[in-house]
Length: 432
Image (tube, rainbow, N blue to C red; front, side, top):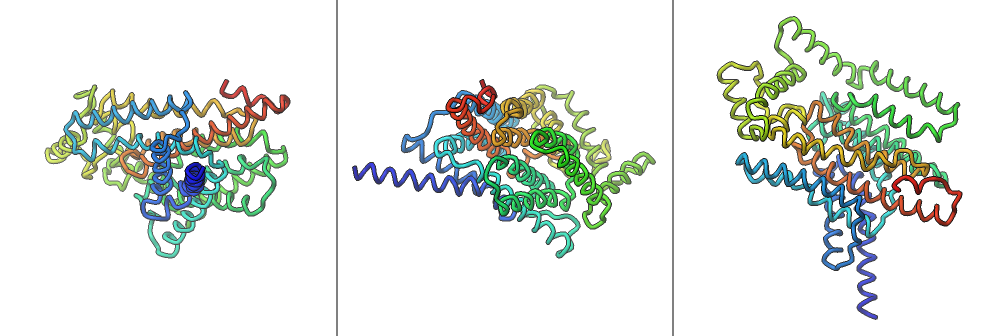
């Protein structure tokens, strides 16, 4: 009995840590050095502890499907990197998918309330927005950059803000709590501000799609009069963001237009847009020479250097990637790598899309939250290689399995309610 009591206390202690870990996935992610690692690392360690003590819950079939996609991608990209003779750090960089397994196990076993996910993201968005404002308006930096590279700072901040928005839907049926609602709204505003003040234009490209998806998600819970107010407020906010010079949006858009205009006039100088065009052209020119397995990281950089020395390209930057996820994968890892990348996007989209129409508001919020991660990573990848940096890999390989585990837990709860209360709704059909 003493042994069982000790084991029970140990399990409860680990369960308490899982609550902290889930909250920390979002809360310190951008305001502390490598803060995006803290929550996922703790969850992963808890999952490993469950395995060692043989308390881990078996993984459902759908979770195994998601992990299988991560496995195929991670192992495939690692083998491709090894094939090209890249350094061990480049090979190991693709093995982040391994951390998804213990994180899934930890969340499914301890079953922490999903509300902690949304509140942690809201606090993370609020803190990152405040820090971005301090960097931009007090320190006088041209662009807020945080601890990560400036683009990752803005893009992850945008994701945090959108998670906070979806938190409003998650708590829609919960008792009203003014402090919680204010934190979620402040987190949403802070996340958007982080994106704006970082000047990460790539993240803004997908905002029309995000706006449509959020409108589709929230529309059933908004009264007609409130819908009109939301649309009007959104239009006013967008206008203010673009027109007020202090946000930096107007200048960033103007810079892009000016570069393209000068390029059309034969002026090849440019800050960021024109060099990207040269990078993309180089990738498209090199791909047909090695279409199946690509050039590899070292091979690409050597060929780029050769072309620059020979004057065969107008690109002068010593860039290690081409600022486009798909083209970068295509030129370095060929068609094989590109198919692996498409798999990495497609499987999570398929997994979460099934819950978009759930009548249960919390379940729908979790489904759309999970759906937004791969969709926005595709958007971010149009002008940046998110998987080329540790922050991008950690966010993708941690957030998706965590959200999927929370989604599965909520789905089980909905099915139990539907069984006990036949009139509860059609939620049990969502994953049938």
